[in-house]
Image 1: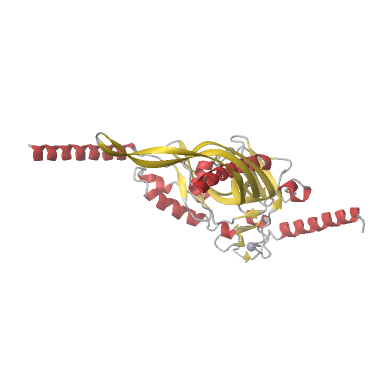
Image 2: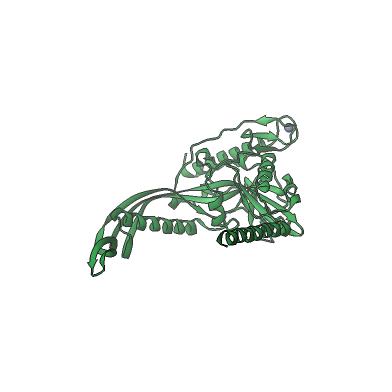
Length: 369
Ligand SMILES: [Zn+2]
Ligand SMILES: [Zn+2]
């Protein structure tokens, strides 16, 4: 076989795989769509309830960063991409799905785009629970919001919740750094003065230089703009142990948020993160607590990436004309977000607080008087 034949063969092979994948998205019993069911981790027929197992491969591969944009790693025609005219989010859905609402802003201004471009995910942490469980979690979260209005717990509905896979890149790198700098060490000494002895602190400065090697594993970078880092930090950790090799079947019934920051952008913010930890590792290696200056020059080797999808439920609801969004970690169930505030409850709490302060002041005055 010559090279051309091999390429054509590969293309044929890929087409076969894709058609097998899209065929198995239909129920063999009734022909309805099969969607990923988090409770059983299987595909489930949305009409007759039949389930179908599929392989969850744990063989998630690290890919050399130089190969990130080679053709065999990009999205094929296995999924569709929609863009939201209102908030700009790009949403990837499997072909059997039609995205009609934007999961981020809840509006219906979503348009199908011609082509889905960019890197295909390599790994996915599947959703662990479905929307019924999500509503239970929402209502116990709501119960803990003591200043929230009475009726708001009932506002969350399954149809206002969307399971969205959020885009992340993780990077591995073998780093070798050369550094030189001046580090400070705080010491204490006892000095004798005319008024007696006292303890004072002073700084000892030392010039340092050397080499430092460190292997970074899975430095996580948020590749989307629609869920800020602060929120991701509060939703974390995700259940990394259950990460599987990406498979379009995980997407069925869910959508994925297409990455908005390129792999190059994400790699440079990962490098910044790594530079920060290298610096603080060097400083703590010496046990120093002050830095005069520290110049570090780092060489990265064997850099690999994974493009990982993390499960987040986005739940939109309206209360008295205002929109609220809460987010849930799709693997641990942790919920974050704002709830409406009933001002009369706050007022009562403030009045009770004032009464308590006045009461204590009165008792104190009695005790003093
Ligand atoms: Zn069926
Ligand atoms: Zn939107």
